[in-house]
Image (tube, rainbow, N blue to C red; front, side, top):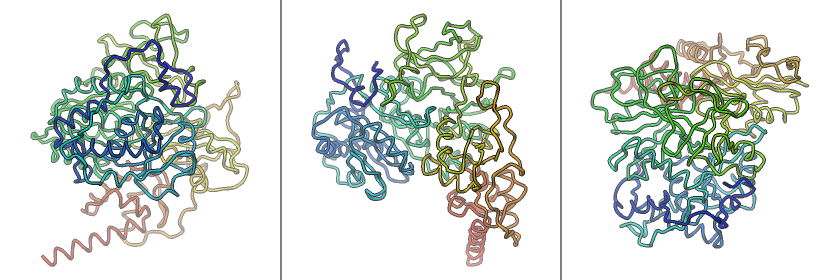
Length: 615
């Protein structure tokens, strides 16, 4: 294990004395073998555009040649990929691995300043993108490549790759880097090795009996670690993955119908969506065998008649996506669903504050060991040594200190019991409040800040408490931090305080922070115009109900009042009930006001009535 993660090259150094160079079959080796044996099998479907294994690997080899020319023969670097398209990510990742590099997924919407920090810290050599021109990417030492021509170019070897596909990759080489929220005020990059990834896909195959005929979904953001499992788990076994549009997966009924129509057999969905999926009625002809979830505390059990298995996964990014997993059965008492048991190659230890094992049934901090433990943090040797530790009383090899509390139950399953710190899980994302506070403190009007959450489930919101030096608005603050943070880390609401409450030890007393109300919310300037027509009044009522406000103005922005993608799906469902029309969730994003959304509804009603009249 390399603790001095100053650069990716330090993690990938060829000076691996003592490490075995025996034959190792990486994910790249497996995918290339599948492409040679079954070149016409479908690997990825985006929209209605399928890509075969032969096309995927052949194009990846062409892209790898272009990468190698830019790398000037260098290996063990990082190639960043800015895309929201899983085919483009898979293509670029395979090409990066062919050059001996790791891939680093980036969101196309990543704020420029955050993007610069990530690219600089990871020492990215190349950034491949499928959007905009080179002015959308900050300038730096990295070279830019438009990946779109490679994704659409004629396939040089329609029958599969003709060249040998021995890659020279070894288990300790870094396969990918995922950036997560950082407790020190800036994001941190987790370096995951090919050995880590290989263990994950091998477990995935065995746990879910994956065969070439399987069809899996890709729902998660490509920058999340769960997307790694969604993609490489099925692809390494010759199965097909289908990208699901957010307008479908945000509405459970639509997602169910999609899974049935596409004959999907394996699906992974965020906890909030999975909880709603299992509550629906399912047709007997569904081909779905497993519905997996994870990322947040699961609060429901599967009903008895569910025609597929419901699986709860748990694991930090630093331990390669999944550390424990379990098929859920009927509820037992008042307990919440468990997080299952350690997967193949993984060990769990529950330790007390003195770092000694606790008895089964007692709570303690979860430490994770085994093949899933990543190499460390890029450029952060201090943080790596703090979180990746050796505790000789339980194991001589390194463990990852999760900060999660848990306990082992009598049946061998583990129960998640919360955090030892204030880390937040929101809509499947991991958020360190310190990073949000750091961004808020850069605003010239803010002298002090704290961040927490209110609500549960789909109603859970990120809440910012601020002490102001000068007057400003919530919208101004949101716009300011939106340049520094991704959208999911920008607080939904702001509470104005005269002073930040402090405990005796001088730290913020979170228990003394007031609940948000109309008197303390730093609100946007609400519109003086009020809804007038029946449609406008009903739309205003729907929006106000969803964001839990007594009223909403004619031009008030739904998302600036606490709305988010999951709540937007609720708006669409309520509109369907009230007006009998189907809207795309995109309509709420494009027209997030009473005025705009009412116009969309009026146009749809008019169009449908004209169609009915013509018929």
